[in-house]
Image (cartoon, rainbow, N blue to C red; front, top):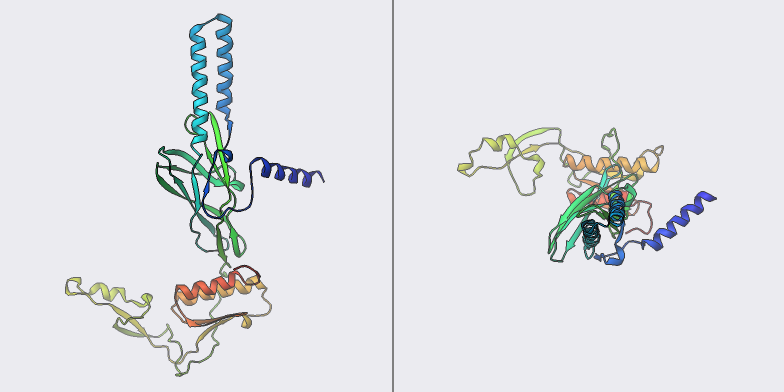
Length: 331
Protein backbone atom coordinates (compact mmCIF):
# COMPACT_ATOMS: atom_id res chain seq x y z
CA UNK A 1 0.00 0.00 0.00
CA UNK A 2 2.96 2.29 0.59
CA UNK A 3 3.81 2.36 -3.10
CA UNK A 4 0.41 3.46 -4.47
CA UNK A 5 -0.15 5.89 -1.57
CA UNK A 6 3.27 7.41 -2.10
CA UNK A 7 2.57 7.79 -5.82
CA UNK A 8 -0.79 9.46 -5.15
CA UNK A 9 0.82 11.78 -2.61
CA UNK A 10 3.56 12.87 -5.01
CA UNK A 11 1.01 13.38 -7.79
CA UNK A 12 -1.22 15.52 -5.56
CA UNK A 13 1.78 17.46 -4.28
CA UNK A 14 3.05 18.17 -7.79
CA UNK A 15 -0.39 19.24 -8.97
CA UNK A 16 -0.71 21.70 -6.10
CA UNK A 17 2.88 22.92 -5.98
CA UNK A 18 3.60 23.14 -9.71
CA UNK A 19 0.01 23.89 -10.80
CA UNK A 20 -0.18 20.80 -13.00
CA UNK A 21 -3.57 20.38 -14.63
CA UNK A 22 -5.33 19.14 -17.77
CA UNK A 23 -4.53 20.27 -21.28
CA UNK A 24 -4.81 24.01 -21.93
CA UNK A 25 -6.50 25.00 -25.21
CA UNK A 26 -5.28 27.97 -27.21
CA UNK A 27 -2.34 30.18 -26.32
CA UNK A 28 -0.85 30.17 -22.83
CA UNK A 29 1.27 32.91 -21.26
CA UNK A 30 3.93 31.95 -18.73
CA UNK A 31 3.33 34.33 -15.86
CA UNK A 32 5.84 34.65 -13.03
CA UNK A 33 3.62 32.46 -10.86
CA UNK A 34 4.18 29.62 -13.34
CA UNK A 35 7.97 29.95 -13.33
CA UNK A 36 9.91 28.05 -10.64
CA UNK A 37 13.59 28.51 -9.86
CA UNK A 38 16.21 26.76 -7.71
CA UNK A 39 20.02 26.97 -7.50
CA UNK A 40 22.01 24.54 -9.61
CA UNK A 41 25.02 22.61 -8.31
CA UNK A 42 27.39 25.30 -9.57
CA UNK A 43 25.10 27.82 -7.89
CA UNK A 44 25.35 25.98 -4.57
CA UNK A 45 29.14 25.85 -4.95
CA UNK A 46 29.15 29.57 -5.69
CA UNK A 47 27.08 30.22 -2.55
CA UNK A 48 29.62 28.23 -0.55
CA UNK A 49 32.43 30.29 -2.05
CA UNK A 50 30.63 33.51 -1.10
CA UNK A 51 30.31 32.25 2.47
CA UNK A 52 34.03 31.50 2.66
CA UNK A 53 34.86 34.91 1.22
CA UNK A 54 32.59 36.58 3.78
CA UNK A 55 34.18 34.65 6.66
CA UNK A 56 37.65 35.58 5.45
CA UNK A 57 36.70 39.24 5.10
CA UNK A 58 35.26 39.24 8.65
CA UNK A 59 38.27 37.52 10.20
CA UNK A 60 40.86 39.76 8.59
CA UNK A 61 38.70 42.88 8.38
CA UNK A 62 39.36 43.27 4.65
CA UNK A 63 37.45 46.11 3.04
CA UNK A 64 38.21 44.89 -0.46
CA UNK A 65 37.12 41.40 0.61
CA UNK A 66 33.73 42.77 1.66
CA UNK A 67 33.43 44.69 -1.60
CA UNK A 68 34.28 41.63 -3.70
CA UNK A 69 31.90 39.40 -1.72
CA UNK A 70 28.96 41.78 -2.01
CA UNK A 71 29.67 42.44 -5.69
CA UNK A 72 29.70 38.69 -6.44
CA UNK A 73 26.51 38.25 -4.42
CA UNK A 74 24.84 41.05 -6.39
CA UNK A 75 25.85 39.32 -9.62
CA UNK A 76 24.23 36.10 -8.35
CA UNK A 77 21.00 37.95 -7.51
CA UNK A 78 20.99 39.58 -10.95
CA UNK A 79 21.54 36.16 -12.53
CA UNK A 80 18.58 34.76 -10.57
CA UNK A 81 16.34 37.54 -11.90
CA UNK A 82 17.55 37.17 -15.48
CA UNK A 83 17.10 33.38 -15.40
CA UNK A 84 13.47 33.64 -14.29
CA UNK A 85 12.85 36.51 -16.71
CA UNK A 86 14.17 34.36 -19.57
CA UNK A 87 10.98 32.25 -19.33
CA UNK A 88 8.46 34.73 -17.95
CA UNK A 89 5.88 36.19 -20.34
CA UNK A 90 6.64 33.77 -23.14
CA UNK A 91 3.48 32.86 -25.08
CA UNK A 92 3.05 29.21 -26.01
CA UNK A 93 0.72 27.86 -28.69
CA UNK A 94 0.19 24.39 -30.19
CA UNK A 95 1.09 23.89 -33.82
CA UNK A 96 0.38 21.01 -36.18
CA UNK A 97 0.73 17.27 -35.73
CA UNK A 98 0.68 15.05 -38.81
CA UNK A 99 -0.79 11.51 -38.60
CA UNK A 100 1.69 8.67 -38.28
CA UNK A 101 1.59 4.90 -38.27
CA UNK A 102 1.85 2.94 -35.04
CA UNK A 103 5.49 2.36 -34.16
CA UNK A 104 6.65 5.63 -35.72
CA UNK A 105 7.56 8.73 -33.73
CA UNK A 106 4.80 11.33 -33.56
CA UNK A 107 5.99 14.89 -34.17
CA UNK A 108 4.29 17.64 -32.16
CA UNK A 109 4.86 21.22 -33.35
CA UNK A 110 5.01 23.88 -30.63
CA UNK A 111 5.17 27.64 -31.17
CA UNK A 112 7.03 29.90 -28.73
CA UNK A 113 6.26 33.63 -29.09
CA UNK A 114 8.30 36.43 -27.52
CA UNK A 115 6.50 39.78 -27.57
CA UNK A 116 8.99 41.53 -25.28
CA UNK A 117 11.92 43.68 -26.37
CA UNK A 118 14.51 41.26 -25.00
CA UNK A 119 15.82 38.17 -26.75
CA UNK A 120 15.35 34.86 -24.94
CA UNK A 121 18.32 32.52 -25.16
CA UNK A 122 18.87 28.83 -24.45
CA UNK A 123 15.28 27.79 -23.73
CA UNK A 124 15.17 24.00 -23.50
CA UNK A 125 11.93 22.11 -24.22
CA UNK A 126 10.99 18.47 -23.80
CA UNK A 127 8.28 16.17 -22.55
CA UNK A 128 8.27 15.77 -18.80
CA UNK A 129 8.18 11.97 -19.04
CA UNK A 130 11.40 11.94 -21.08
CA UNK A 131 13.55 13.50 -18.35
CA UNK A 132 15.78 16.45 -19.12
CA UNK A 133 14.72 18.44 -22.21
CA UNK A 134 16.85 17.91 -25.31
CA UNK A 135 15.53 20.54 -27.71
CA UNK A 136 16.93 24.05 -27.33
CA UNK A 137 15.84 27.25 -29.04
CA UNK A 138 16.47 30.98 -29.00
CA UNK A 139 13.45 33.26 -29.33
CA UNK A 140 14.20 36.72 -30.79
CA UNK A 141 12.56 39.85 -29.45
CA UNK A 142 9.18 40.35 -31.08
CA UNK A 143 9.53 37.03 -32.89
CA UNK A 144 8.68 33.37 -32.56
CA UNK A 145 10.36 30.00 -32.68
CA UNK A 146 9.05 26.61 -33.77
CA UNK A 147 10.06 23.51 -31.82
CA UNK A 148 9.16 19.93 -32.76
CA UNK A 149 9.07 17.29 -30.06
CA UNK A 150 8.75 13.59 -30.81
CA UNK A 151 6.91 10.96 -28.80
CA UNK A 152 6.86 7.20 -29.30
CA UNK A 153 3.64 5.54 -30.47
CA UNK A 154 2.45 2.02 -29.89
CA UNK A 155 -1.29 1.60 -30.48
CA UNK A 156 -3.64 3.23 -32.96
CA UNK A 157 -6.08 6.03 -32.22
CA UNK A 158 -5.60 9.53 -30.84
CA UNK A 159 -2.38 10.27 -28.98
CA UNK A 160 -2.52 13.30 -26.69
CA UNK A 161 0.59 15.47 -26.40
CA UNK A 162 2.36 14.80 -23.07
CA UNK A 163 3.13 17.57 -20.61
CA UNK A 164 5.92 19.86 -21.81
CA UNK A 165 8.66 21.20 -19.54
CA UNK A 166 10.57 24.39 -20.39
CA UNK A 167 13.95 24.84 -18.70
CA UNK A 168 16.60 27.55 -18.83
CA UNK A 169 19.88 28.26 -17.02
CA UNK A 170 20.74 31.42 -18.92
CA UNK A 171 22.83 33.53 -18.43
CA UNK A 172 25.37 32.24 -15.84
CA UNK A 173 24.02 28.79 -15.01
CA UNK A 174 23.84 29.46 -11.27
CA UNK A 175 20.06 28.95 -11.23
CA UNK A 176 17.66 26.66 -13.03
CA UNK A 177 14.21 27.99 -13.93
CA UNK A 178 11.46 25.82 -15.33
CA UNK A 179 7.77 25.78 -16.14
CA UNK A 180 5.15 23.26 -17.28
CA UNK A 181 2.65 23.36 -20.13
CA UNK A 182 0.11 20.79 -21.32
CA UNK A 183 -0.85 21.79 -24.91
CA UNK A 184 -4.24 20.79 -26.28
CA UNK A 185 -2.66 18.93 -29.18
CA UNK A 186 -3.11 15.39 -30.40
CA UNK A 187 -2.02 13.24 -33.32
CA UNK A 188 -3.90 10.47 -35.10
CA UNK A 189 -2.04 7.15 -35.12
CA UNK A 190 -2.89 4.77 -37.96
CA UNK A 191 -2.56 0.99 -37.61
CA UNK A 192 0.89 -0.28 -38.48
CA UNK A 193 0.85 -1.74 -42.04
CA UNK A 194 1.14 -5.51 -42.06
CA UNK A 195 4.56 -7.08 -42.63
CA UNK A 196 5.21 -9.01 -44.76
CA UNK A 197 2.57 -7.55 -47.10
CA UNK A 198 -0.13 -9.86 -48.43
CA UNK A 199 -1.36 -9.75 -52.06
CA UNK A 200 -4.24 -7.46 -52.80
CA UNK A 201 -7.65 -9.19 -52.86
CA UNK A 202 -8.61 -10.39 -56.34
CA UNK A 203 -12.34 -10.56 -55.68
CA UNK A 204 -14.62 -7.60 -56.32
CA UNK A 205 -17.55 -6.33 -58.29
CA UNK A 206 -17.15 -5.91 -62.07
CA UNK A 207 -17.77 -2.44 -63.45
CA UNK A 208 -20.84 -1.66 -65.53
CA UNK A 209 -18.99 -1.44 -68.85
CA UNK A 210 -17.49 -4.87 -68.39
CA UNK A 211 -13.91 -3.65 -68.33
CA UNK A 212 -13.46 -2.63 -64.71
CA UNK A 213 -10.27 -1.15 -63.38
CA UNK A 214 -7.35 -0.98 -65.77
CA UNK A 215 -4.58 -3.29 -64.64
CA UNK A 216 -0.94 -2.34 -64.30
CA UNK A 217 0.66 -5.60 -65.44
CA UNK A 218 0.22 -5.36 -69.26
CA UNK A 219 2.23 -2.45 -70.70
CA UNK A 220 0.56 -1.24 -73.90
CA UNK A 221 2.80 1.68 -74.91
CA UNK A 222 3.31 5.44 -74.61
CA UNK A 223 0.73 8.12 -75.33
CA UNK A 224 0.38 11.87 -74.81
CA UNK A 225 -0.44 13.03 -71.31
CA UNK A 226 -4.12 13.64 -70.64
CA UNK A 227 -5.50 15.60 -67.66
CA UNK A 228 -6.30 13.19 -64.89
CA UNK A 229 -3.55 10.69 -65.64
CA UNK A 230 -1.74 9.59 -62.43
CA UNK A 231 1.65 11.23 -61.95
CA UNK A 232 3.11 7.77 -61.26
CA UNK A 233 2.47 6.80 -64.90
CA UNK A 234 4.57 9.59 -66.43
CA UNK A 235 7.26 8.16 -68.73
CA UNK A 236 10.21 10.14 -67.43
CA UNK A 237 12.79 8.58 -69.76
CA UNK A 238 10.83 9.57 -72.86
CA UNK A 239 10.07 13.02 -71.39
CA UNK A 240 13.80 13.59 -70.81
CA UNK A 241 14.54 12.93 -74.48
CA UNK A 242 12.35 15.81 -75.64
CA UNK A 243 14.19 19.09 -76.04
CA UNK A 244 12.80 21.63 -73.51
CA UNK A 245 13.75 24.42 -75.92
CA UNK A 246 11.13 23.09 -78.36
CA UNK A 247 8.41 23.18 -75.74
CA UNK A 248 8.85 19.65 -74.45
CA UNK A 249 6.07 17.11 -74.23
CA UNK A 250 4.52 15.14 -71.39
CA UNK A 251 3.90 11.49 -72.20
CA UNK A 252 2.46 8.77 -70.00
CA UNK A 253 2.56 5.00 -69.94
CA UNK A 254 -0.53 3.19 -71.15
CA UNK A 255 -1.58 -0.11 -69.60
CA UNK A 256 -4.13 -2.56 -70.94
CA UNK A 257 -5.48 -4.77 -68.22
CA UNK A 258 -8.53 -6.19 -69.93
CA UNK A 259 -11.58 -7.07 -67.92
CA UNK A 260 -10.47 -6.79 -64.34
CA UNK A 261 -12.72 -6.78 -61.33
CA UNK A 262 -12.92 -3.61 -59.34
CA UNK A 263 -10.62 -3.65 -56.31
CA UNK A 264 -12.67 -3.76 -53.12
CA UNK A 265 -11.11 -3.67 -49.65
CA UNK A 266 -13.79 -5.19 -47.46
CA UNK A 267 -13.11 -5.77 -43.76
CA UNK A 268 -15.84 -8.45 -43.61
CA UNK A 269 -14.02 -10.57 -46.23
CA UNK A 270 -10.82 -10.95 -44.20
CA UNK A 271 -9.94 -14.40 -42.82
CA UNK A 272 -11.75 -15.01 -39.50
CA UNK A 273 -8.64 -16.46 -37.84
CA UNK A 274 -7.01 -13.02 -37.77
CA UNK A 275 -7.55 -10.90 -34.69
CA UNK A 276 -8.87 -7.34 -34.89
CA UNK A 277 -5.49 -5.56 -34.97
CA UNK A 278 -4.13 -7.92 -37.61
CA UNK A 279 -7.15 -7.26 -39.80
CA UNK A 280 -6.76 -3.50 -39.42
CA UNK A 281 -3.04 -3.75 -40.21
CA UNK A 282 -3.76 -5.74 -43.35
CA UNK A 283 -6.36 -3.23 -44.48
CA UNK A 284 -3.89 -0.39 -43.89
CA UNK A 285 -1.26 -2.20 -45.97
CA UNK A 286 -3.75 -2.76 -48.79
CA UNK A 287 -4.75 0.91 -48.81
CA UNK A 288 -1.12 1.96 -49.18
CA UNK A 289 -0.47 -0.70 -51.82
CA UNK A 290 -3.47 0.33 -53.89
CA UNK A 291 -2.43 3.98 -53.74
CA UNK A 292 1.13 3.13 -54.71
CA UNK A 293 -0.03 1.14 -57.72
CA UNK A 294 -2.65 3.77 -58.67
CA UNK A 295 -5.49 1.23 -58.47
CA UNK A 296 -8.86 2.83 -57.65
CA UNK A 297 -10.32 0.94 -54.73
CA UNK A 298 -13.49 0.90 -52.68
CA UNK A 299 -13.37 0.59 -48.92
CA UNK A 300 -15.81 -1.05 -46.51
CA UNK A 301 -15.48 -1.07 -42.74
CA UNK A 302 -18.55 -1.20 -40.49
CA UNK A 303 -20.54 1.98 -41.24
CA UNK A 304 -17.82 3.32 -43.55
CA UNK A 305 -18.52 2.50 -47.20
CA UNK A 306 -16.45 4.52 -49.67
CA UNK A 307 -16.77 4.09 -53.42
CA UNK A 308 -13.85 3.52 -55.82
CA UNK A 309 -11.41 6.42 -55.71
CA UNK A 310 -7.75 7.39 -55.47
CA UNK A 311 -5.81 10.25 -53.92
CA UNK A 312 -4.69 11.68 -50.62
CA UNK A 313 -8.21 12.52 -49.40
CA UNK A 314 -9.51 9.00 -50.06
CA UNK A 315 -6.45 7.42 -48.44
CA UNK A 316 -6.70 9.67 -45.38
CA UNK A 317 -10.40 8.87 -44.93
CA UNK A 318 -9.75 5.12 -45.10
CA UNK A 319 -6.79 5.21 -42.72
CA UNK A 320 -8.72 7.42 -40.29
CA UNK A 321 -11.58 4.91 -40.22
CA UNK A 322 -9.08 2.13 -39.47
CA UNK A 323 -7.38 4.15 -36.72
CA UNK A 324 -10.62 4.97 -34.89
CA UNK A 325 -12.41 1.67 -35.42
CA UNK A 326 -13.87 0.52 -32.11
CA UNK A 327 -12.94 3.78 -30.31
CA UNK A 328 -16.42 5.00 -29.59
CA UNK A 329 -17.01 8.67 -28.91
CA UNK A 330 -13.74 9.86 -30.51
CA UNK A 331 -14.26 12.36 -33.34
